[in-house]
Length: 369
Image 1 (spheres, one colour):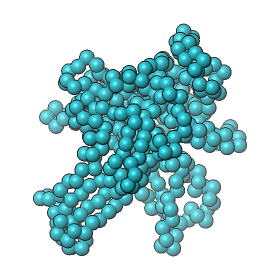
Image 2 (cartoon, one colour):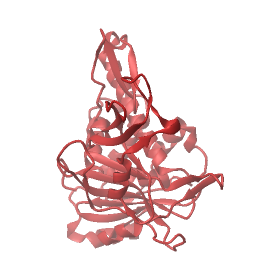
Image 3 (cartoon, helix red, strand yellow):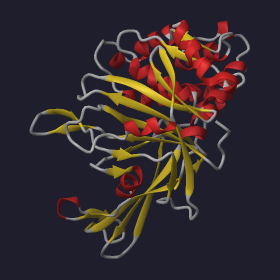
Image 4 (cartoon, one colour):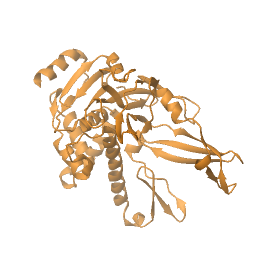
């Protein structure tokens, strides 16, 4: 491994970022799904900084009960405080904790990186909420809690709804969608807000993220069996429905739905469609008038032709350099290499590297990567 590390240091030379660390992660049999997501999160600088700050505020780390949050914080701390600039770390405790918390990740089967990311972020939110609630004392805990999407709790006191707790995980990843339904008879619009930590988009051959987002927000007519119950008309009516982004997140995570269940085959199939994702993305389908601009900083790539086997790697931007993380190996790559993960215009192509999870940071508040 020394050779790989020194090769990376040579490639960066005097451009090696001050204080930065580039470490590969050991694979424990089938944990590439976990390693690729961890690298993307490590190079999500605001998330990393807040996680390390959280860990730094723990008075006696030895006294607190180990959980997924403390294991992740310890791992990030371990990477960031290495004396060497490059090398390999074994995320053993973290992986053991993941398997202990969720039986889904216990076997040696091929796992889904998006399912893992979703589980991890929701678990971190739950832990932070429990900590906040227990520190508020028993008085507050006696008030009833109502669960709203993505595990956020809103307490109700004397009929007045309190704001749900917003953790630093929410501050980074959470956005708000508005589901608008318009009755075609009385034209009343019903709007329902829901939070999200990532957006899962349906994909089409030879498309782009922009067109996938447009489809996500396109108007759908509800008729026949799908009619909508309009409260004003007090009956089922034809209606138009659409999703809009009400509040874009600071970190926009986009999951491309590359694994599709094929009814006739009774199994999942991987869609190798070519979906172009830009390095700079403008969100135009938001309710805010101004366009939201984002910059791509990480891509989790699925390598392989099928859904039940294959491999995950990640492409990461750090201090204006692009790096390729493949478990223990870390290499510098050219920015143009990101395009190889767009997918294939033909059904059976030799390239099986496909962008699966995209991480964008809002330019409005981004730190210099």
